[in-house]
Length: 140
Image (cartoon, rainbow, N blue to C red; front, side, top):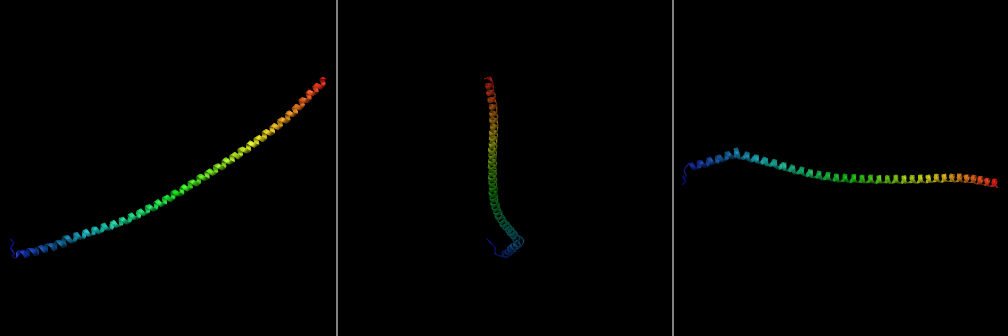
């Protein structure tokens, strides 16, 4: 089937020479390009993981700061509401006190007017009593 003459070693040498040329010209640059690409992908993947970890830590930090800020503004609002209620209660108390003092003053004025009216009536009653008495005494 096979002839083992001089062509077989020549074919073997040609095959080895072709394999060496292909290795130098094609396989080594291709292998180098694949390795470079793999290194590039690995580097980018590592960088991406680092960036993702950093982004996650920043997100957690911002969420913590946001929660703290919300807590502070809620405390500020609660304090402002308490202060407003305190001021409102104080104003209501002042208004009630002023109304009470005005009521007392009005009552005093009414008492004074009543006293003045009673004195005037007493004088008029006295004057009318004298007139009646004088008319009665004159008529007798």
